[in-house]
Length: 229
Image (cartoon, rainbow, N blue to C red; front, side, top):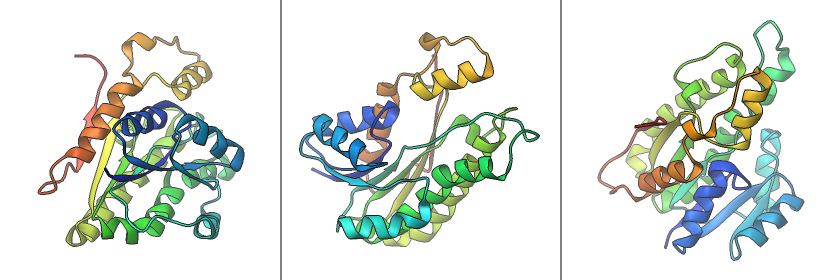
């Protein structure tokens, strides 16, 4: 049984992978935005350990998490949480850029720093759930794509830096996934939503579990998942 720290377990891909790992009897540490959401996670995943800290405030993560207690050993850290706000470069002000960079890039960087001692102790894996927008920046998604491009850079540097410590780093790039975020995005862009042509969260969760189960003699550096056959 492994020990896994997951962000974004409240819905979508994060909830699916937390459910899959819980069914396997794994030991879960789940991060919630606040205590109210942490209580919801406790009821949904009995026996898990929940911590409360807001990823939108990355500078406060160290103080918030260290007073609640961090794991001494981790088999994996899964960065699943993310935010998306569409808009053109002409429309976005500094606050809009900062909001997405805070949650999608700065918070994962800081959380990884805080948990590296536990990951080195295992040694464990760091898995960044990125996006197709981390490979190609579409119109009206420049802010989101910028945060995901930065996340990919973080993963690449971390992979090289921590290789000798036994920590393995994987970036997963899912295409369109049937999640509440995808529904909101299509609505905001005025596009028809067709869930039947999207990946399911269970399919992505299965891929993430496969990354965790990959033999320790190798690294799945990057994994791209696309809908369809």
